[in-house]
Image 1 (cartoon, rainbow, N blue to C red):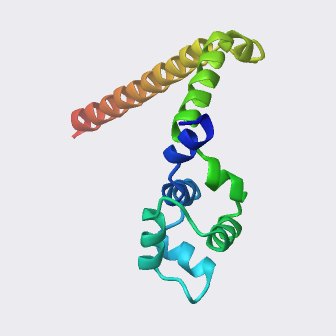
Image 2: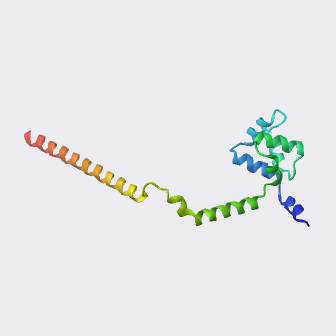
Image 3: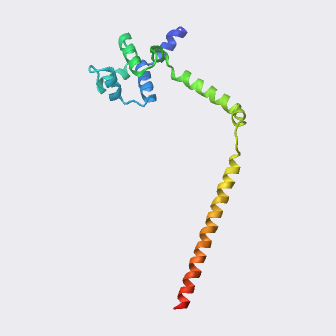
Length: 142
């Protein structure tokens, strides 16, 4: 089996339509509305179950999803996973470059927040002490 026929055998165009639809946050019914009155949720479901789509249907769906036809024809999940994995690995390896432009130290911000909470707690405690002293004075005066 040649490399191209092996690749095309792995690609399920209907499943790719579903993936793009889900990435765009669309429900099947919303896609059916975008495709026109000849479409309904059940027809979208059947379309997503098909391994290959008719060229005119593929063109119509790609236009409704605002993605290139080639994306639906050629999207291969394993390739995408490999790209994402490689990108993430590159990010991990170069992560220090992303943090060099940080204008503050997150630990400093945390310490500031803890100090602010401590000061607030101390003011609240002082207020409660003053209330208690006032109540004691009122009780003694009676």
